Image 1 (cartoon, rainbow, N blue to C red):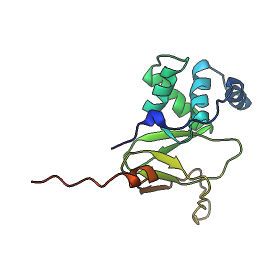
Image 2: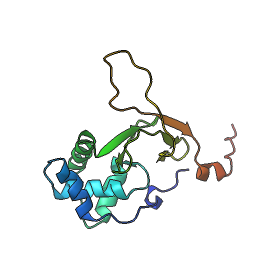
Image 3: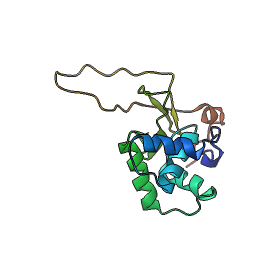
Image 4: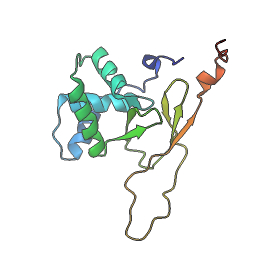
Length: 161
């Protein structure tokens, strides 16, 4: 059974000014929604799905949000290099802010029991040897397994025929 996503921990609150400054530093237009979405990712302790970002925004001062507008803003953050997208075996895209103090690629852990995805920033993944004239833009490395919370749950008995 999945543990509720709304119980995922939050980092300390990030001031709007920090999110605004990072967007503006790229020479990009600052909008209320861009700042709110980026701030939500910065405050999250782990990658969030589109639905989880939407739920957090709707319970905050942002209020109701159009799902297409949210999707476009998440994609914009990825294209601008302010966030990255993680795709696990469940085919759900999750988004995580790129923090200024961390530019290194890192793997992610996907719990096959509850579906949560966690960054593994302490682990580093080096780029593979590529042929001449090839270059790495981004790598995805996802480890599938069972998280500590799900590993402590009692094993389910198989259904009897």
